[in-house]
Image 1 (cartoon, rainbow, N blue to C red):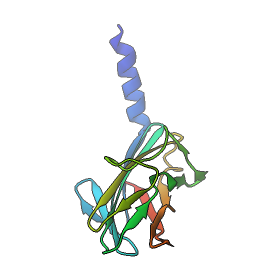
Image 2 (image 1 turned 120 degrees about the vertical axis):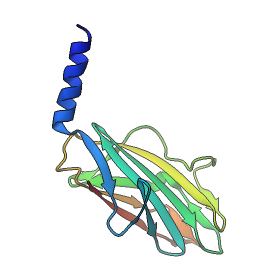
Image 3 (image 1 turned 135 degrees about the vertical axis):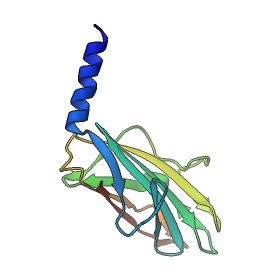
Image 4 (image 1 turned 60 degrees about the vertical axis):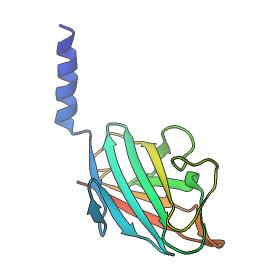
Length: 151
């Protein structure tokens, strides 16, 4: 008897399609992720998925230049068709690195895992934009702007 409600919940969730994966226009597919060449000698590897009330985004920023790249991981924001999304959880950080600001040498990468609270609304989430204003090289901003389209 206890299994019946779980089966019902699973069937209802499946029927309303509460999620999916995103693709990045202009990105080069690499497994489930997309590679993007960004500005100022950087490259990006990104992946985004939505399931029920959470949008999960991974963004890896790699320094392709010869001078240091400063990254403030917590400066990332995401928006859907109706505006800014609220974060799930605390601060965003570079994986395997400490600090609010990270200096990347040539060839080094900062991988940031982010989660945002979303409404269960496929039309609203059909297009999501990630902006990262916390990347600089020599004091000059390196804006990051990624558009994700729901598959």
